[in-house]
Length: 229
Ligand code: CA
Image 1 (cartoon, rainbow, N blue to C red):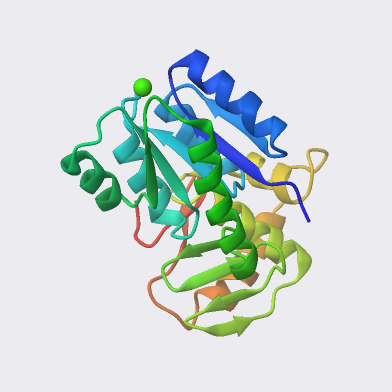
Image 2: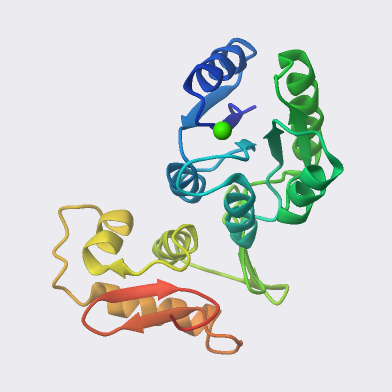
C-alpha cells in the first residue's frame, strides 16, 4: 500500500512537532503547516489521506480552512483539534465539514485510534483520491474522468492538463505555469500548444455540459471554476 499522508495544521509549534514525530513513528507521512494559509496551500497542492486541523490559527482559522477544503474535497477525513469541548464548538466544527474532533490536551493514543478508523474506512472506499468540481469528477489513481456520470476519455496530456486545472481550482494559471506542469520547463510558452490542448479539453468536458468549467482570461491565462471569476 502507498504511504499514508497526513497534514497537520497547528500553530503551536511544540505540539505540531510532537504530533508529526509520533505519526511518523506510527508509520505515517506527516507534514506540518503552522498557519491556516500555508495549510490551505498545502491542502490544495498535495494529496493527503487525512487532515488534522487546529481551530485557532493565524491567517485563516480552522473552521474557515475546513470550509475551503470541503469546496474541492468532500471526502478527505478532517479531525479538528479543539481546546474547548463545549457542544457549540463541536457543532461549529461539524458544520464547517469536520468529521471528528479531539479535545486538547491531545491524547495521542486517542488521536491515533481515530485516525485509524478513517484510514481503514478510506482504504475500503478508495477515498481522497478524487477531485470534483461541479458534476465533473477525476479519480487521481485511475485517471478516470466523468462528467454528469458520463465517462470521458482523455489523452495523457489532456488528462494532465485537466489535473493541473482541478488541483488549482479558482486560481488564474499563467501559460508558463501550465507549460511547466504539463509539458516541462524546456517548452516554449509562446507556442500555441496550450490553446490547442485547452480546446481539445473543452470539447470533451465542457462543450456538451453546463456550467462551463474552463475559462480564458485574455492576456493572463486560464482558470478552472464553476463560475467566471
Ligand atoms: Ca492554535
